[in-house]
Length: 117
Image (cartoon, rainbow, N blue to C red; front, side):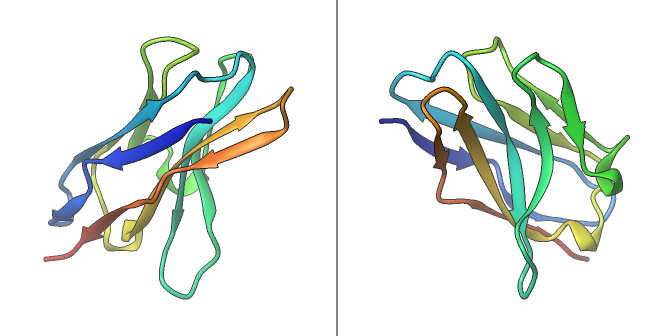
């Protein structure tokens, strides 16, 4: 069983930066998708950025060039560096791991990011 805990959220002014971290307890599966989702009030949860099983990345178009996904290796959970933050980035951000062979998905409890002046 994997437990994920996000950290690094907070209140930041427009144009500011935050770095989100995801700490995992338990062993991460060998083949997985790892990334970050977000959910704003009244909206559906959406994929922000993700490592695919081959190590390639996908980014939501609206965050390309501003957000960067990183990790230490394929078995560690990802960081999300967020720069040039905009009010529309305000949401609860969730770390996600999807184990492809086991067909299981794990979520953290979320961390609030608020971008406001």
